Length: 171
Image 1: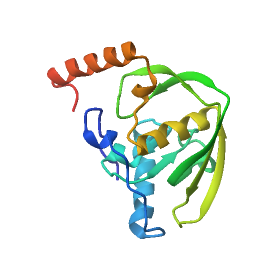
Image 2: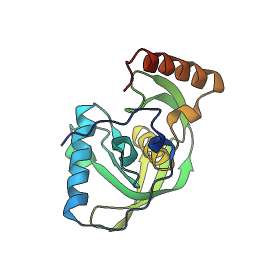
Image 3: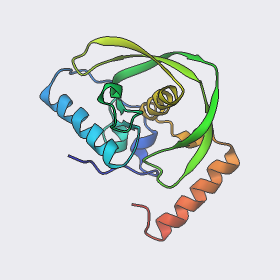
């Protein structure tokens, strides 16, 4: 099932998500499958549960955009434990379609999380994977990539979105 993506302006995107406590359930497995399907349908490399209206600490990432199944990552209750270096690169968000800006992030990110079965693991990503880990974990903490922009850029994007809302083109 392909979910509708929640867009900027919906309060769920700026709320701290609740930890997942039930693992290895048919519902959780189906949700993960549906989130990957939704992410691919919208041509993303990451998708967090609040972006589909669910306030839970779950995100899916695939930097290959569906080309390499071995790159699929499911992070449940992720906590970033280490950040190293820095990179500046263009970032967008499925919840803020049509807007992309350069964002400074760590070049290497280590995260501790659980998989669908509930097994704990650690993952270290570099470059795009590091960026995706940070971006998606931010979502679970109610932080949007706009927060990482200058006040001026953030204000310009917000004004453009308000115009789109007024014109009925942002729903």
